[in-house]
Length: 396
Image (cartoon, rainbow, N blue to C red):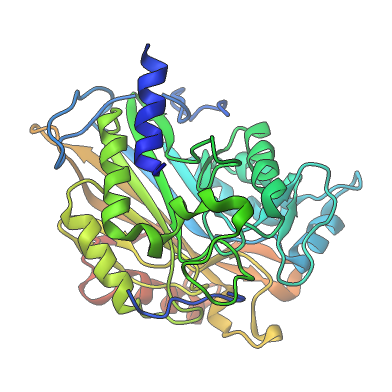
């Protein structure tokens, strides 16, 4: 059953790479400062599938950011910051909290499985983070995350269920592969100031040890194919977006885990897919991750495509032979406005460069022109892209 079909069915029932690359071929809870919940809820937007009801606020902000990867060294750093024997990721991420918690909705990229009992934690290229990692993401103001990436299957089938449980225990929703064949993993649906927002997520692969295949799926988790970019293709993703709109979503966000690692340029396949999704009229914003370096934002058919947001927290850097730019990331906060015709636009966004202080305890630091001119200017130039078509302005 496709994601679109499974989701439609659930609505009806409720009503009665090691390192990875793209080859270039084709729980509720919490509230915002204004008292509005950004979790759970329902209402639609005009799109290619026709008119739907318009309710809720006419303006809202949505934030998203780079890869969140609980690798061995950040886990050790979080352990060192803890006073109770656990893992204090809040200390590492505190600088970024004001930006994310100030948005009406915030989405992260959870690039790891999560352990409910803090066993079998990350070792090498198999990522399995402590439960406190999810706790920290929720504390920062994130409402949910994409779980579709090349580390989704790092803890096997059990890890799929464990990750969702840990996230739900901390009030985080998940968009990505479900825990079993009978549980659609997406979309994640949010009620943001009375506006229903859907989040879908896909990756070039979901198994980092699949021998470089963008199509292979483990037999014990065959349902994961519904979150694989190269299997779904643009047409399948569009179908899922249309299904979300038919359920009442006014805004549809799509996370894409794609691209060539350490490459600032989107591949032809990324550009082609982005064009198809945005021209469909059913997708509002693409949130790109995986390259581990910042890539441009580009406006396509009036809508924003963030091809790559770098790393928010990871152990990558020159110590492992990665480019210095892998310590860079960027948080963005997009303004959505509804016009008199009922259609949502994204007239502007603000961005905040970040950098992992790898040699100083793996703290995520906000970057300014004064604190690190090289990193700030590099990230600012990359995210704006030629011509700054996304109308991005710096947050600081």
